[in-house]
Length: 247
Image 1 (spheres, helix red, strand yellow):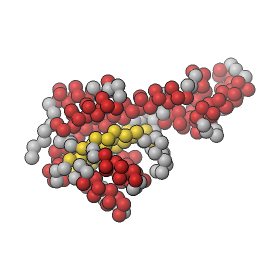
Image 2 (cartoon, helix red, strand yellow; image 1 turned 90 degrees about the vertical axis):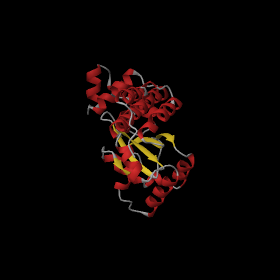
Image 3 (cartoon, rainbow, N blue to C red; image 1 turned 90 degrees about the horizontal axis):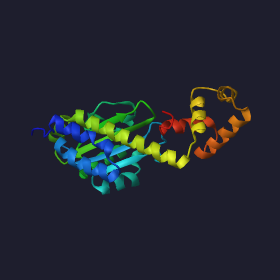
Image 4 (cartoon, rainbow, N blue to C red; image 1 turned 45 degrees about the horizontal axis):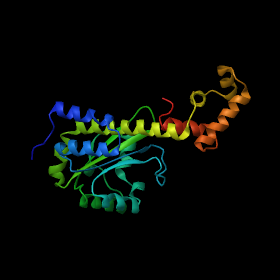
């Protein structure tokens, strides 16, 4: 079976529209137009932080383009704690077929069988990484075709699929940054304080740089810790960096 790859101009134009989508519904509408032409029938995109605890999914953001029953089962069985494709994508960027990863536990095998029953008989995994913060993403792409047919169809379009995954990561990064800026209401002086701390400055150094008192620096530190709900400024810096607030 031959690939139904998009013409270069059509694919490029479609991918470029992702950044212009105003909400998640618009993203799904666009993906439903793009992906079938690339051999894809089902998809899930998840983005999370590299240091996110496995049991804590607060940083997860997800696009679901498959049978919702699978995602419900995935959450109920807590497969996110053993997902081999997330583990792979933390440290790798190459697009791979799902069958290339060995499944090391019964839970992973059960997850793969369930995925095959809900639109991912063929499975291709596309990692996405950003150099600006600790957020990465995983684009799961599938079809009901047998792997020997479906995987080559999807892999033939991996260049465009990699571009889509990166555009989705960028879209979420911008959206999360905007959400957190609105939630935290960081002032310019508080952002500057975090930037100095990230650069390794101590409180007295910051006071000298900004020509303010040491007491004023400590007061700003206290306010920033309260806004981030953390116990120390180092934790606030890590969160601010992961949200893309200090770029």
